[in-house]
Image (cartoon, rainbow, N blue to C red; front, side, top):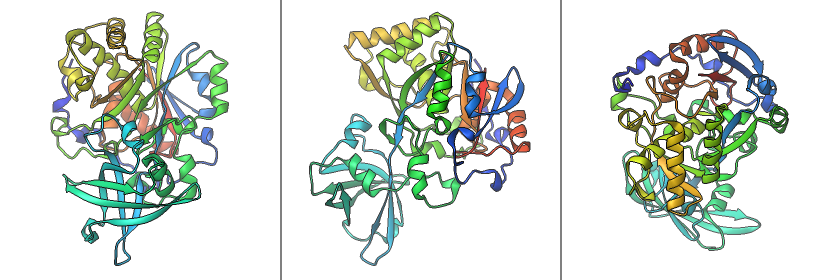
Length: 409
């Protein structure tokens, strides 16, 4: 397998006019346009007709993470607004769910807008939750690299931090939308199947799905499977180095049920298609293969250090079959009497990567010079330039609220 470290990010650039970025969602989710690419042939449709292009008896895998209202506004003693953007829990929490369920106090790594204006020991505000008023305080505990460790405390212990965020926070729209969040965003920047609090960005490929689309998929015996990857702000981190070698891929938390791994294994045994809805689902699925490889090669691996690192796919033994790897992962569950895997992945999918689990990807159109564009290239090769050129020439809308594509490997 070719190593992607020497790839130049400039080779994954294209011109994206500002007017092609979708600033708002369409009134109907499944009215978004869909570009279909199979065998280097392109056709157009809409998400309402997605089932027409998915093989019968295939499985679609969705990321059921839920976007939290991660931006909170406080006011300093001079009446100036300071925004605290909650990115991820402090390292001492075993996983994100634990931090979200904390009561009375919690610590998070945050970006702070207007940090220089924060001179007080505490910032405070009142939050109304279910008719009750809660006094919420924020304290800067430490300055990190570009972020801060913030300790939040509140006076009513029967409310979790998740409930506080939902009541006090604002939808964390991507910075490239260049607008403030509006009331419509709280619903539309969320998939209809979102279940588990934790993301600061939506798994945007899923925003197009409706009950009507699901019903049409069911009519073709297309199964729905769910995994959870909590999308971090790192998803918007641009590649600023000249080559990929010097870019640190961000870690993200994943949760996968043992039953889901068993379902994936059965599909692989039967040679049935597995199609990922979104790049986050894809990173989760492909990470499962490499976790299986680690389970085979490191039998004493504990849950604590059982994670996928950025360059693992290019340095571990990728000749192990998918069936063997997934079997090993199921054995790993059983030896530890676990029904759910909670870990982190730093997986980078780039040209040269050999797809293990997925046969296709449903995804939006991504930013120039981004790791997501590298991922697209791993599926369709240099043909991504033709796909994106077609989308620009045929009035497709780009980025989070934009249109999407179905790319078959």
